[in-house]
Image 1 (cartoon, rainbow over the protein chains, first blue to last red):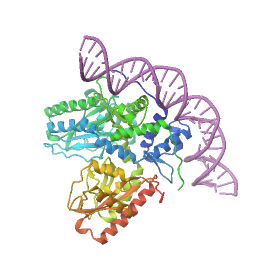
Image 2: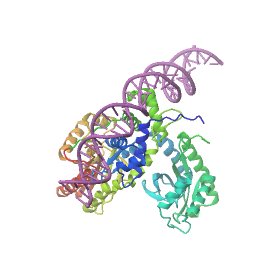
Image 3: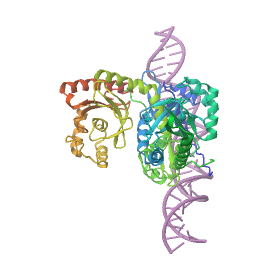
Length: 259
Length: 259
DNA sequence: AATCAAATCTCATATTATGAAATAGAGGAG
DNA sequence: CTCCTCTATTTCATAATATGAGATTTGATT
């Protein structure tokens, strides 16, 4: 529980806030609105954003003067996948799990209001094929979506749901907000999420969150299983293995239990 | 030519430098070495890096105390692909080009010493299939690699080449440093790079760089073509279309000619 | 051409980031 | 087990830096 000291370097924090705000604006944002939203003086915001622009983290569309996230992020992302860490920490554990379970497995993160696949491994036993990296799926009809949203503040989840359409994918899909929120409380209770043919009739899915040292859910891992194979026994086996795996990964990210 | 004012906010610049240095260390880096490499006071480095850690941009491996790039980057990356901008700017233009040429097209960036595919489109006419996003290919045997390195300082390219092995992929592969550097000067002269069955006997490739507002090469686009189709006439047609396309994309990124 | 709104730039000042030095913690040798 | 060394972490007085008010430019609209 040894708490880390909280450091604060105003200008850096402001820059990161600006970067993240710009990132969240798919349609770009003007400097004035940025300054307003971040309660910053216009010149301060301008100076900091210009610096991010010089470094390529942010781009300004010449005509509209709007700021967008820059290509530099791609470079960082490229580095991340090269990093021994991601491989040591996640890939290694996940490969082991896939080998053990034989079922197709996905690593995903939340981006805006959707689930984005980051990496995937095909299971030998499984007839379910892996989704391509970068593919997006909805939060309301997938185990990954549930695992990624279950520990977010209720209001935030409600806002997300209101921005999207909860169209039924199968007869099992949860299509109402209260129903989904209720489902999330079960997820919190169990520690993992289940999709019982809610996204597709082909298969079921179990997903659990990965947490970092701040106890924040940063990603989630799912195991897919053909519907006809999704027996209680199999479910238990998968849950046991999956929970152990995400716990290991989280631990390696510096997560400590009960933090 | 209207030069933008160069802003400087020391702490932010230092933070970004630290972030990028950490990103480049696949095996992680200790705070002391970081401070040394960036010529920073140990406490300053520690404070700034701790802040990046608080925000999730960086992670510290508990046992080794080494710092690695954090998962937050994935979130940013997710946002980038949602951004109207990347779609408007690159995807839209590239889809148009793919439709026009009918050949398979790739968008890639340089990450460390390798080419990383960011996005791809399959051409209707082409027998060449697209490589998956995230796939890495060498710089020395691909048109993309040449396009991405041609405008880097010679010493940097030499360093990169020395870190990798220039194994022959086909009889045409360039396998020596002087040969590659010579090839790059041709690329700079033409403005585009060609791979004449150097990576694979199946096909040839033409690639050209995308530049941002700082005139920096930030990405490259390639068009693949089956070897038997790679006539002089076809080559000219592809080059014309490709150059127009990358020029449009660069322009939209704020690039101005002769800048 | 005049008006207005937004972006960009300048500079004196107070706030903030800084680094020297102190402390804590981990690992190794005797 | 204790001392020694090396590194990470924290503190705090000070000087350097980031800040924001306001001036200026840009460009769009009437």
